[in-house]
Image 1 (cartoon, rainbow, N blue to C red):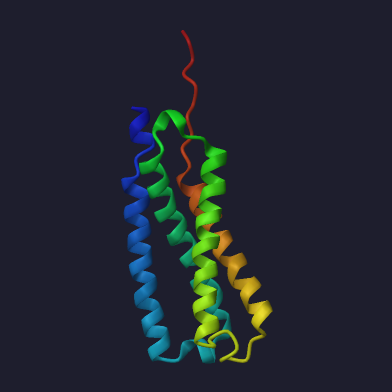
Image 2 (image 1 turned 120 degrees about the horizontal axis):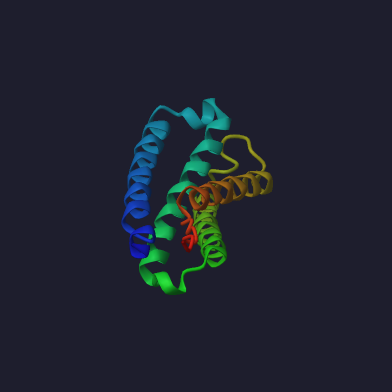
Amino acid sequence: MIAEKYSYKLPFFIGAICAFILLGVNTLAEFFKIYSGYQWFDNPMHFIGGFSVGLLGIGILRRVFSAERYENTKQLIYTVLIVLAVGTVWELIEVYYKVSVLYGGDFWTDTYKDLLMDTLGGILSYICFHPLIKKQQIQ
């Protein structure tokens, strides 16, 4: 029963679906030049990206750690670290392609904002999928 509460399949599956949807929306946004017309559009994209990566990270963490060793605090820390690592790599890609300043943004402000949105999305993924084990009452 405890193993079902710690299943890696559901968060990983939902994270993969969110990532594919995000990829499709990003492709359409690039094609229709939405980022240049609506600079705020980058914020929800990073939030959803952080959420997706957070769910994928939770799925991987649940697969790696057994239910007996599973701790909520460690999962939150690892999830945030995974999201920040992927977000940092994404920001390096944006620097390489000069995307952050392409639409008139300041590099450091854009980078901090993007990493904040990634982190908030990762924290939401933890909130949505952290297991709550209730102690059974002894009768």
